[in-house]
Amino acid sequence: MVLKNASILVIDDDADVLMALRLLLKPLVKEVTTEKNPNNITSYLERNHADLVILDMNFSGLVNTGNEGIFWLNKILKQKPDISVILMTAYADIDLAVKGLKQGASDFLMKPWKNKKVIETISEILDKKQYTNSQKQNTPQINTEIIGDSDVMHDVFVKLKKVAPTDANVLILGENGTGKDLIARALHDNSNRRHKPFIKVDVGALTTSLFESELFGYKKGAFTDAREDRKGRFEAANGGTLFLDEIGNITLGQQVRLLTVLQNRQVTPLGSNESIPIDIRLICATNIDPKVLADEKKFRKDLIYRINTVDIIVPPLRDRGKDITELSRHFVALYAEKYNKTPFTFEPGFISKLKQHDFPGNVRELQYVLERAVIMTDGSVLKQEDLVFSSIERPSVKTTNIAATSLNLDDIEKNAILTVLEKNKGNVSKSAKELGITRAALYRRLDKYEL
Ligand SMILES: Nc1ncnc2c1ncn2[C@@H]1O[C@H](COP(=O)(O)OP(=O)(O)OP(=O)(O)O)[C@@H](O)[C@H]1O
Image (cartoon, rainbow, N blue to C red; front, side, top):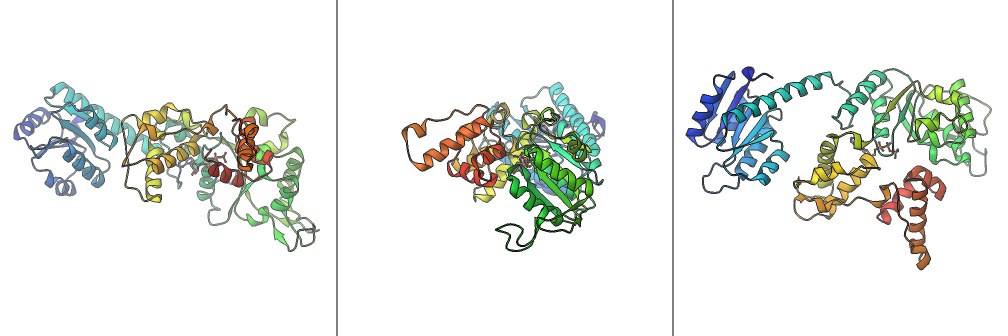
């Protein structure tokens, strides 16, 4: 927004300050309103439009902690989240400035101010606001719980919006914990099949015998444990979407079976002679490098072509810059509620520390780190020291020598998990498979041993 179209509200209990700012801004902007009493802010904003508020931090004249300013800042943003607020204080208190910025203020000015600086600050905020609004208008509206405002996620949303309503098979590629599950769900929720089932199968964790019975179903008596007929996941997803996760980990034999079903568009349950026609939209996901998938010794080309009409590449969290802030706010609010804690603020440097970490475990790792921080911290300010990054997500996990010194079963199990995870570079699916347990069972153990 250009300065001359802006409506600005100035709130300060010092009449001289109000007068000076009015004189400065009046010739430059569309409208300047000045207000001495902050108690009138709510009713003013109810009746009038303001693009920007310049807010004093201290009103009582007795206690100059700036907390009144923070109080009114929160009130304004709650009432009108789109308003930009510039805080003003006579005290060069950087902590308070950061506190205000963290809570949503757009910028901070020190009294006595320089007129040039005031005008520059207002112009920058309004320009940025105009840019953000135009970006928002270009961002496709999709129904999803995926949080992300970075440019790379914007590209993902554009693709998602285009592909979702089609029946095209989609292959979602991305590291562990980047949100592939959420993308798959969003594709379904924004498709014409959204009122039909969405069925997810973690095919990477299925043994060869389970792969067929789980996907294609079986008839009573087809094998020893088949005590009754059971529908396969293909049949359960009929009319809707079938999401095959960890597709890159299935064996060549399993690939052939899958390909046959996709080509014929029908499944034959184990122990049955009858084929069942299937109408599914197929979404697959993998964390395997596309170059590895292109290796014909590991993955059939004909299957890749069939499952990959369109691919969506989900970027790692370390490439998403500002998303870390938004995701952190989201997870901290979520866990504060879950663990009945009061709402948190972040101490200065908290978000920067998160941004410096490279998050090999991506959003899932961020989620766990913040959950742990919320649980462990005292008080209502999350501190840098509350952030403990798990060794499990580090590319090179140092195995402990527990087994050499202890024959305690828990210790042995913990050591085996660490060894296998290190071998598989933190890939939970592969590790679970190698340990002979499901991914869910492995996650339970990671929790149990606080890994
Ligand atoms: N952009 C996002 N916004 C909100 N939550 C997210 C986002 N991305 C991931 N998450 C959360 O992070 C966790 C991991 O995401 P998800 O399971 O979708 O990742 P994934 O890529 O499928 O992982 P894996 O490869 O291990 O299966 C989930 O709890 C999910 O809700």
